[in-house]
Image (cartoon, rainbow, N blue to C red; front, side, top):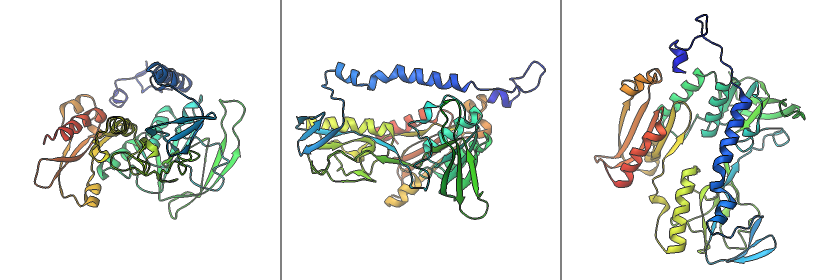
Length: 384
């Protein structure tokens, strides 16, 4: 992008070249690489490590028993790690429409001419920018603020960057109905046609048509059909499985980790850290606490938005007084040399009032996902 912007990448006649993306090749590469790393999390990998793996639908039949494939397994300790799935709002016509989610989007083999993204969270922003870069006409429908859990400056930077890439934002909008004008053809390289009927007042279009509708309105825990009541495990379908600070459920034999657990951030790295905690507490009787985990998160847009700990709004809600230290990166040598100065970048660090104890930070920059690790380490080690 920097080469194009500064005129270094030119056609033979000296004009700016028109670049086209071989979308099918890009997606094929992605699937090939995904398959390459998949064995690390596969059933075969778990079995090779010495675990007994049963593949099937499992449900609790009692406080210390699970039934899978009509076989009853008795346990001393159990961990529920069923994850979550895309939350699909009850919009009229949506359930019958050929929409995509983060689980099915990567099956596309042809680039949709027009994409509408329903939702403005991390997945929505990452995919909106990626498909705009590929060449789709992308519109994001947002009922509330973009990346609403992040700092205002970070949100503004992402919106500015995506708009520069051609993404259109429609804010304060409600989708009243989704109409399927054409179902998915048998040809996987052809597209369905959808119409969204919108409401939201002045400035909001009455309707939008698209060939791809990405539903990215949040996550729903996978807790249905697990027999949680039979195990004495308290849960709420929308929020997930209730856990205490040790990761245990209302049944002390049973722990829950990741997206299926209530009240924890739904990020991949959080799930991994909770899994470590569950192993230590369930098998070794340790006292690791969920509240003590310091886990960074990252939105992989350009620029990236990486955070750890509390935002200013989190601190205010928790009654934690903070001092905030902010710095722009537009004068940073590396940012300038890599052609990122126009987009700037920011670092914000929050410390407990009148101390050097870091309680949270946000970085907006190319490579922010790497930069945030230094702050995370400082928080974990108590370095101010």
